[in-house]
Length: 502
Image 1 (cartoon, one colour):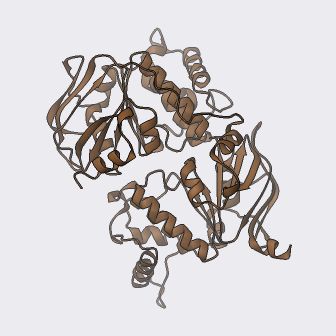
Image 2 (cartoon, helix red, strand yellow):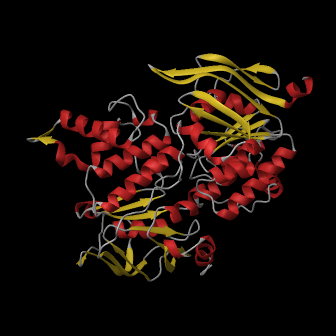
Image 3 (cartoon, one colour):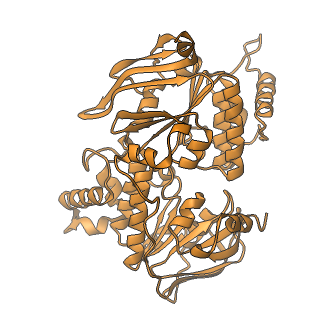
């Protein structure tokens, strides 16, 4: 028994947290062992992020105790937690984009020499040593703004490691990483395990959870409903624990029937980097067309160019036989196009607004009563989308920032559905969304296609792109390397096509 207690580096006892009348955590008990990876799963809104923020000092818990290495702790904020052995890498990165890698690594703890001046030589040496040890190649003097999301995420993980933490929390760390970068991250995690560091791994990706985790805990509606060794459970049991019901299949049946060609992209190229080169394809009415490729292949840039927010150098876009070379997002929206962006907090939401504002902002003309906006119409529209999307919230007046990431994504869906778009483009629409909510999003996408809407979906998750599409276009280094029928392809062919122009 003594050995078991010594193995436990982090112990949470009776943790509770409420926001107003909404009880988010209800007397949670959780133990994390030294030198292990604890997988933490649950639907969006189940309480995972809230529990970690209470641990990290971002939120103050209402009840309960936290023990780190046998001693009781209660952190006043993230800085306090970092200095006492707990680090967290957030899904939504918080970095100074106009500063370089070294500055971001040492922000808030610049080392000084005997003269009291910031010791830049020491910073560079320690940063170089850290990245070398982690097997990462990084330009230390490059500003974060000019790095990809995946590179920035790896730098954030390196920063957490640099604090010599006993416990590191990773919140959806692979959401923007390529297959190769995920492998590198997992090698890094195994190395940290060997050093006795405990890792808490929050993810919705089942395959990764079983690959890297030693134990798995599941939260549902603020309660800890299951903790098991990874080898003693399976995917079906996890899903049932998370959503309170069994999901026989991860994807609904794809029973939409595509019609005639509605969207035609011909020889499209972009003016500025990252360049797209001579891209041509057609999409049918009522079709779900997937776009797959490695991070940086140009999938997002393709959607942005069609939507009018990226400058064309050549090529044409036709919809229903009419030229649609848009020069702005408003122009695209006025012609029945909609687009869900990958970075929802950066350019998909108004974080200081409530659900009403975020749901109705793209369609204000529909909510007028005479010359003025009608509050009752806007509230009614928001309430309808909350019901359709099964958004977890107290009501339309909730601030969007109080919702979990997945529920924020549902609000974005609702915003665009209010416009009734004909061409719906989605960039990583289920990123950071739990398995139950994903299934609902998949059903929504299929139903939209059955109603005659055309859907273009970008996804980095290969099972997803194979599970919900009719055809898949594969991007490779700014070019379209091939188009395949989903029922006739496999993962090997998609990977081969994604590497065609590298």
